[in-house]
Image (cartoon, rainbow, N blue to C red; front, side, top):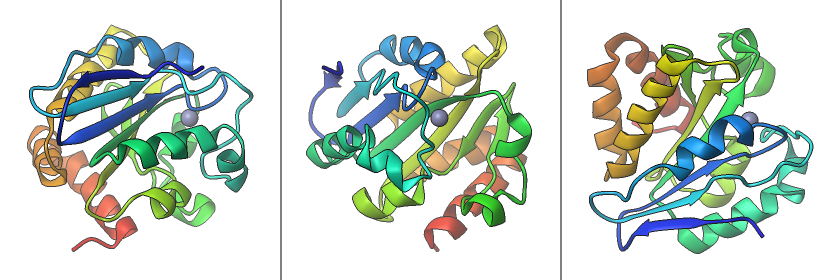
Length: 194
Ligand SMILES: [Zn+2]
């Protein structure tokens, strides 16, 4: 049984998920488990979806395998704000500007100290979300130190209190003007948002 933590109640609803495949939970679960309740609304957390062998979330097979549990949780909670926390070792491939041609998703953008922001899988986005939802994917380095952990914690703390997509966009643009602009442009273009 996958453990789900529910903090707070009511709207807006948020869902944060870690341990989406393979060993990533080692770097993602503990920080999610330590989050506190949001100021308003609900924060649901699945700290470790699975520890079974890695399948990319960009692969259809993911959603036939353990991704089914993820889809069931999203359909049940219907979060306005959805965040996936991943862990990486290959910085260059995630941030490669040609990623959009190679993998069909925009490149991740580094915000600070190895913390990357990018798009969730278009398969999941199409199945479960509308353009009004905020759907983000965060990547934390497999061998990150205290600094990247601190940046990640700040980002998660802000997002768990966030009440709308626009509030999140304003925060990113304010905090990371340059990288934020590129990340938001990628996001909007990818999801067809004006
Ligand atoms: Zn991952």
